[in-house]
Image (cartoon, rainbow, N blue to C red; front, side, top):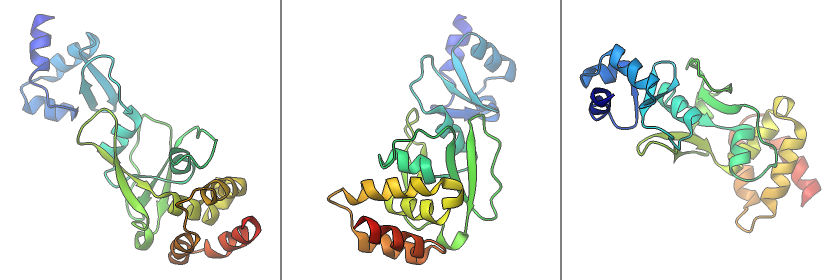
Length: 199
């Protein structure tokens, strides 16, 4: 146990792979023993993090590592922005067309977005549990636009609820929302109709 504790000090900080542990002089067998002793935690296929009782968003850490362009979208983004009451049963993540979604341990619903509009309203947030880990997230406005654009899968009421709550916010700018809708296909008309009812 003492030797294993000493080996933990060699491990890379934050999230690391088996091959990265090996580069720091920790063999596969030693890594597995540390895992069994509770000194490291497996967070996904081939991914580990040192420590016990880790306070981290394990699901997003794995996603950010395996799919650097992964972006929180639709109901997951709306829930994070406090625009809907629903707690999604899986994480909605978007990737640009042409990128293959990786297999993750977490329950994830992958969405493939057009490359031309993928970055519209996209920023990134820190992932809890690792200082340098970040993951993409769509703005409240882009997430509302996507809820209307993909209303058949997101649910029409989801977009209405999010829009209603967003309009109550003092910082909401309907013109900005319509600008984003204009740049994302199939969203402007249903969004405009909903705004005419709610405003």
